[in-house]
Amino acid sequence: MKRIFLNTILGIGLLSGSTWLYVGQTQANRPIELPASNIPAARKTHTEPIIYFFTRDDCLYCRPMHRLANQLHQQGHTIYVVDASRQDLVRRYGVSAYPTFLVIEGDTIVRRVIGLTTKERILGQH
Image 1 (cartoon, one colour):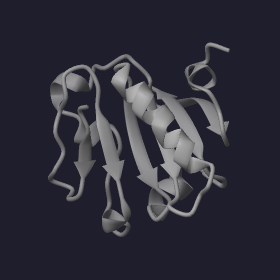
Image 2 (cartoon, rainbow, N blue to C red):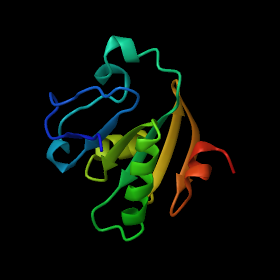
Image 3 (cartoon, one colour):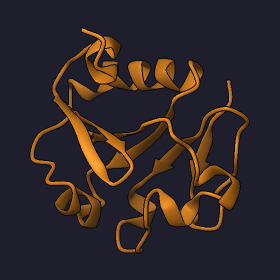
């Protein structure tokens, strides 16, 4: 299973086909611009939607959604897992409940899915 866990801001890597990025508590006070500035130039033309998964450690409903996020990653989707301690990103995207999935195409949020869900709902295939 290919995963990238971002423990330092310089630890970003590129997987062939999909990206799994964990933005955890260790970066709670560090700025991180997602996705454009962290994706190499070759990937900036990526036309697939980018999925953000906002989660918390103490969230009971987030646990099964981690498995769903992993399935989406294995299917080749670009997904960023963002911990609730990243208040800069929580405020920026207006996240008020957990778990929350945001599907972003270009600079536009095209879908916001809150709570327990299915991959079909996240991908807009329901």
